[in-house]
Amino acid sequence: MPSLNFMSGEDPLSLDRIRSVLTRLEDTIIFSLIERAQFAHNPRMYQRGAFKELTDLEFHGSWLEWFLKEIESFHAKARRYTSPDEYPFSSDLPEPVLPPLDFPPILYPNKINANPSILSFYTCAIVPRITRRETLTLAAKKRAQGIIGSEEYEDDGNYGSAATLDVEVLQSISKRVHYGKFVSEAKFSQNPAAFIPHILKPNREALEALITKPEVERQLLVRLHKKASTYAQDIVADGETPVNGVNGKLNNCTSSKIEVDGVVDLYESYIIPLTKEVEVDYLLNRLEGLSEEDIENLSKSKGP
Image 1 (cartoon, rainbow, N blue to C red):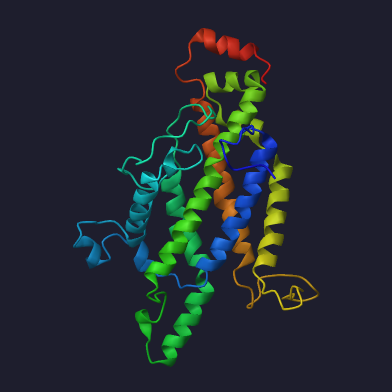
Image 2 (cartoon, helix red, strand yellow):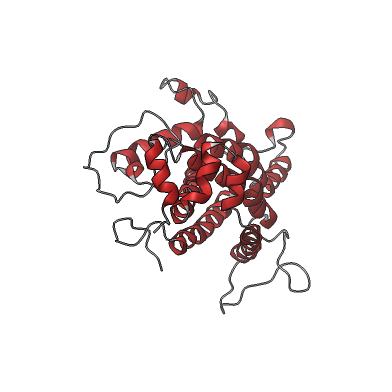
């Protein structure tokens, strides 16, 4: 199994290694989503200024933004964001307390960070969908207790637990999306001449076509559906996976831990398109700072 350790001596731009990393991230994201789906939506967590406790601390963002800031401040001190595959959601983070690691040169210098978009689509579209079942269950329990109207929906008060899981999901999605830079660098390095004309005369559509394989994307979505269907089940004592649904098919039944189609839609509607944007943005940045002679020589190179 290819290593995630950039100091291991393995080629970090090997397409086999990149595919392995992306496949393992699928598992991480699915399991994290399943855990988050065990809590209600708790929309108050995503509203800026909703917690007086935070405004008293002169923090005017949302509960989740505060959570991210606190966690990422610690991670920054441990030099997490010096790694080429890690990107923070927060700004103005402290400097590392450890000296930097001497990573091998991997990516071309760039400032592309898609995390604002990731945070937006996750909180606005993904959280409400994956927590819908738990939110409805909570509402039924509140009605049984005589709590009705606007007070019956969405909020179970588990702000710490839910935010902890939100951070895990967001960091995993961020790594998955920003790994598009590794894909772009690997493919550019193999054949610079194919990309350079479309970078010099910016053509996003042509660059996207060079890095997109529709059949690979189709297989990814099929694999995701199968994984999510399996992971969303409980494993019985004898090791057999109980099958929910009809005719032996796993589906979005009420006993599943998460809506499987919601997981697939996360990738199809958000992660894959945003990854492509990162890949193309990285390529459009790939020649910045190079002289005409450098670009000419790169055009003639055959890659590694």
